Image (cartoon, rainbow, N blue to C red; front, side, top):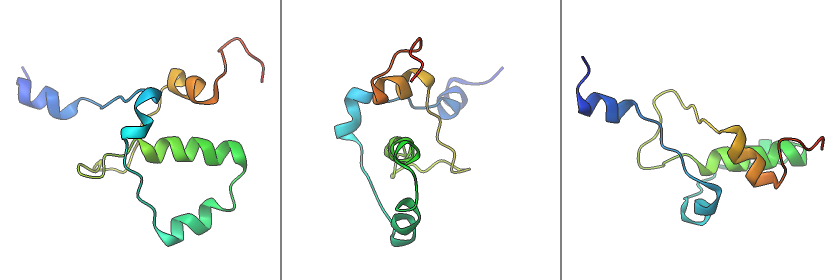
Length: 83
């Protein structure tokens, strides 16, 4: 049976769109150059994903999880919208 400490280490941190202003954003020159080639929608999704990274506690496998709900809130669309 896993201990409480193990469970806390495996939990994912979920931030809401309302907390975007509290997130740190760190950029690297190579990253900025590659981002400049992205289309607008992909760029916005990338910015949202990057803003979810905790710079003081980096994920081991560099994976960031975004929920469908968070994406819909960020783009201000409903799930029944076709656009």
